[in-house]
Image (cartoon, rainbow, N blue to C red; front, side):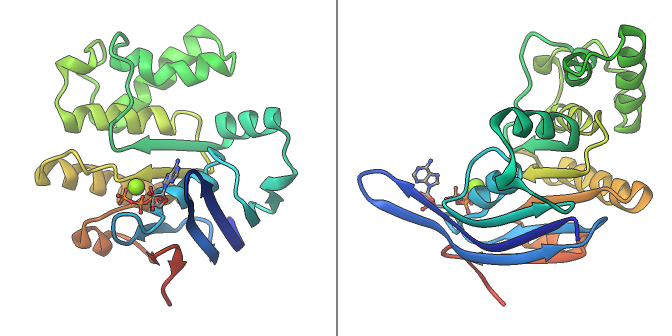
Length: 221
Ligand SMILES: Nc1ncnc2c1ncn2[C@@H]1O[C@H](COP(=O)(O)OP(=O)(O)OP(=O)(O)O)[C@@H](O)[C@H]1O
Ligand SMILES: [Mg+2]
């Protein structure tokens, strides 16, 4: 199993307590394309953040590739995120002043890879997502679907063990959404990329191997 979740709980403390995740358990095999579905507020993003080491659970355990995440120090978490995980968000989260090529090689710069190598790898990755003719475009010079493909190339540049995507097609028209989902499916089939994708779209379910349904912080059987 690449992901094992045991009795996971997440409670947000504010003026009122929000029990966003209540005793969630499931597992995912390596190489699966998984959809995380459920109504607004059911805990999908919360779960993705716990799995992606972007937040700390209140209770329970997450084991990724045999390693308990709770055993990590903050530095180890940062290192793990940078080397092993990839993220794609609804809002693309591209820096406005960076070109497509620069956005994609930035994570490799942080890993202290040589300039020649990071440029070459970023170019190859942008080619894979069909953007070899847009290397020097800024986000504002790209369509929504193209910006999301840059974000996907950036997420994949470190060959992540797991790719996390939170509603990656939410801001896209149906044609661009199809391009993104087809790209995910291809990555999943061709290189066995494990993908955990949050989605609202019932239509997206036909692309995936496994569906995890959340309702009020509980996995539906
Ligand atoms: N940082 C936070 N502080 C307090 N409560 C939060 C926080 N983040 C989320 N919540 C609450 O936790 C619950 C689950 O939220 P979450 O964002 O995981 O839902 P979601 O399934 O991703 O919804 P959506 O489909 O609208 O994105 C909601 O009741 C939400 O209000
Ligand atoms: Mg959400």
